[in-house]
Length: 316
View (tube, rainbow, N blue to C red):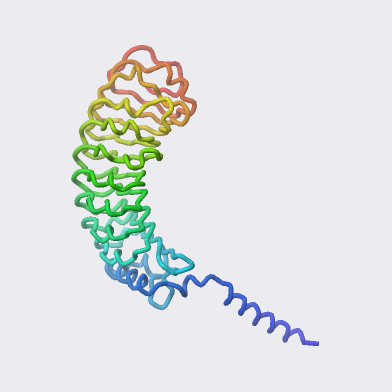
């Protein structure tokens, strides 16, 4: 009969072998080309402490902010965020990560320069976030080459120029947030038209955009629209409708001018309406009381008249 130490040693050996056979091999599969690209990105950012785990002696799939496919070891996700000391421009080496689907540079105020053309060479990119940085220059038209893109977040930067009409060529782009920049010009009429049957999100607040909302937007199933603090004019009633999926609408501090009296509000999902500081006239429709989930309604600083529908939700 085997002694207790022998049994214990045998158990340890079995456990070790089992772990080696059945533990995830993602780290070992770290693709060498992707690893070189990541190390080049780290070097371009002056080897910040945030990326201290990015060392050649370890597998890149275990590095902070990096995720790989378990079957191939190819990098599909890269998140670099929350570092006030990281400096530099977005490296061109990003183009050497061809399997990227999710890319985020967030809350990195030391990142400067324009959005590099290298980002337009990521054919599988699904979500792109460059937010709370100091990048400047235009929203580049080459983003239209990202035909797999569904979400684009370029908020809280120093981008200028107009919204490129070429964004409308991306077939499944349904989320656009370029708020808190220095954009000018008008809304591209064809935006979201290729994805008109899908829920859409448009956030462009705190810019210098102008003109009217294109009539083509009446066919888009907007869930959220935030155009606050721009210079938009004209009629915005096309965004309303009883059966619309609209949840949040903020058109505050613009120059919209339309009759609110005949507007029909979405009744099932709408919970925020902010129309303050415009030139809206007419009266508040009694139908607003039928909006079941309404939590915030602000039409102050307009040209409205008539009785206010009885509701403790309304701020006049």
